[in-house]
Image 1 (cartoon, rainbow, N blue to C red):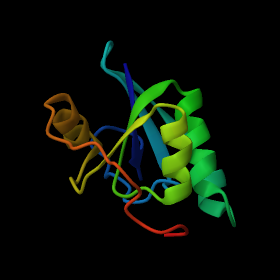
Image 2 (image 1 turned 120 degrees about the vertical axis):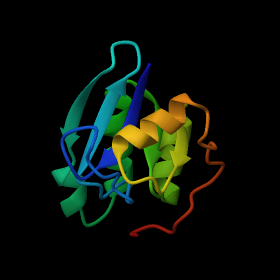
Image 3 (image 1 turned 30 degrees about the vertical axis):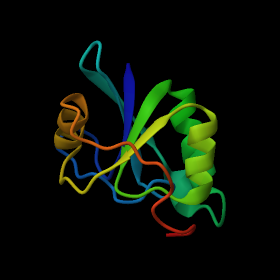
Image 4 (image 1 turned 45 degrees about the horizontal axis):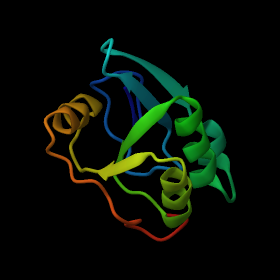
Length: 119
């Protein structure tokens, strides 16, 4: 199973990026193999509009069934929900800790966006 996590870095010890659509990168972690890939989200960072939708499309293309981020806006939330991606928000400091909490069942699935657009 693949889990996407927003991040500012290139490895599991990197910080969780609190933004989704404008996150610097998306780390895609494969729980079956304990491996990961990193997707650069430079297009989303620079986008005038639609950053959340673009990032959601990248998560779906990567095959992730869950997303962990600091916050998720309404357009991204709808796009991810339409593609059956479960969403979780957290304020933990690293991607590794976010994934560990997800695996342990300590994150609560988001039922709605928690910020307005263009956050």
